[in-house]
Length: 252
Image (cartoon, rainbow, N blue to C red; front, side):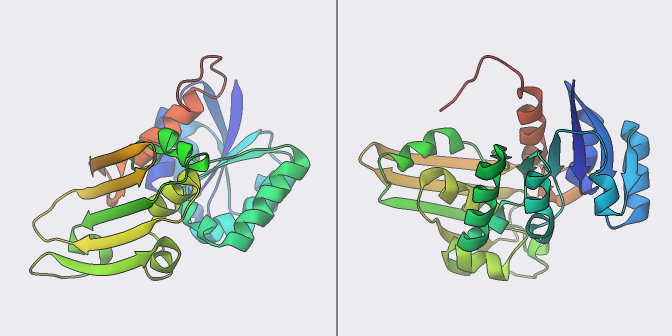
């Protein structure tokens, strides 16, 4: 059975710890001692607030469910310790220099950086853009105003531009755009809207290229304990973990 270490003990970490199949969570790390201890008790793991002590545990994969800052701070050390890393806070890779440094570290030690599909679908076939570059890659995201800490009486556009610029203003809300760009091989254009009439987070993806046109709409159900987090994002990590050793690989 694959042993994993869980970096981050928030809502998604809790779902992973409670429902992971075919893997064993042996250690959890969080800067908040209470959260680490609570989650460790849930999955019979050992809690840590010291990263170096956490890394002395016996696991082969780290699942990051913490933050962009955590990826930047710990990502390279995890890879150079001889472990794969699954990254949910994909926004860290909007920084080209950091991304290339992490990829090079993984290459040098023969390890993998795995990015789950998260709160959207379609990442697998968007990778054809690496062979036939898309002429258009647009993500239009609509959120309830409260999820961005805002108030609005009507549907309002709060950002329009490139993903790398959007993530500077809304670092916790645009991981999807960065994941799309990494898959398709070009940066994503983003429209971020708030709408008091919506209760779910809506992602609309538009792609055009020599291969044709793609239109995808996803209406995410919030996680049970955190309305700002997509339940689909947590499920995508669970699915990735479940299939790590499956000899049948589906998707591009």
